Image (cartoon, rainbow, N blue to C red; front, side, top):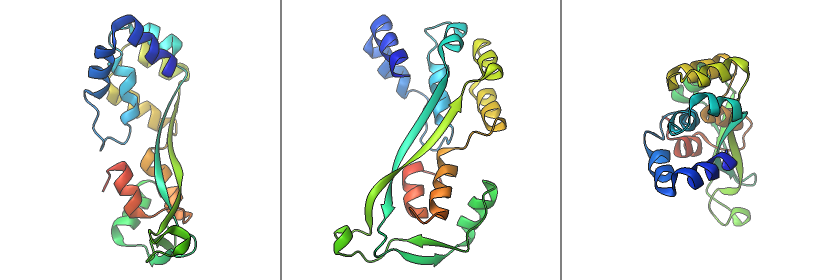
Length: 174
């Protein structure tokens, strides 16, 4: 992705990249990373498809402090989020504690990554080369098992690494 971005900046100018990279991205769009495939409109779709192998999106979440985190019941909204993502609903999840010396009274200590990975296989390459819509690309990615940033975050919530509040803050999903 970076190599492609630098090529586009060199060939078409920094303004195009800056302008196009921010156009149409909504933080609420869980599969926002599919956007780069579509905003490279200055290139022919078959050229993008031939060069594209993988797209990775990432966000950092704050990790709950292991010394002071608190166990909590899974509320109905969290329970529904787990169900919709087809992830086993944990018996309990964790929230931030009151803080302690280990976390400098913040309730958090360290960070962990949330990842969304789209691997470009033959069918995806065909869709991109045909100039398919973002919706079609999203659908195929989901059908091929791609997990969203939010779903990866739910796995980290279930493991007790972060809280639902932190996941919502970072992914802007409610």
